[in-house]
Length: 319
Image (cartoon, rainbow, N blue to C red; front, side):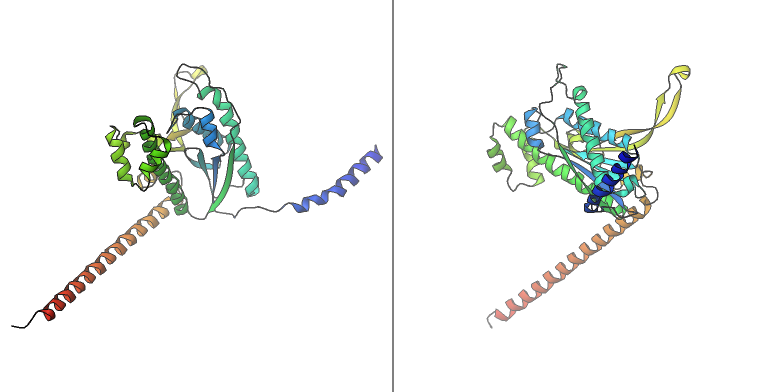
């Protein structure tokens, strides 16, 4: 046995040199971390499984189901936001999961999300007749992780993703309305929508009796997952009594304005006031800059008007 043990130690030391090829990928300390999970090849995947266009309620609920499982698995996630085939997970600054190694954190979140997407499929992807839609092929997701130094950056990031949700959903809603209700081909619908503004798309929808603002909030705004205190009914010997517990909830609210953050100021208690103050100052500065631009434009118009009047006066023939 001593010979076998010695051989094992020699073999370990002989091959262990390969570890030097691994590169350190530790993330900066004391910064917010965002892992974004994106569907890979989801256009083909949704076509193969006959998802409803432009939005499949079950498909979005399945994404929420998988994201909720990630919040329950990783306690350092303070908030998540999802729309279409993507989900972003915000980790608190102090998180030290896997020693803050980027590859470990990203792969753990992506694998947790993908596994729960598959596990939740049979219960959620059910037809109107109650029949399960078989999973025809494996869903795939990729992921990335980004460091953000301030809460203001986090709010701007989430605003960016929610603005993207609005822009894409308005386009897709109008596009599929033209295809389904106006018998346009997909190429013709693209041609109709080329170079159109939001107002143009809303006008097209209105012709078909659709008020975009009345579309479900989950479609227009995406889904926000956060932890909240909820009242629950107890069971067992204490059946019928109510207790307060922390649970992951899904809301469909606007995160671009201040109202959401004021209502949920417990998400980022230490940095929330500072970030709001910074955003207010930026808005004030933007308004001041806009006023200055208008003032300069007004002065320029006055100069041009006076110059034109002077030119007209000199060009008038003498009596």
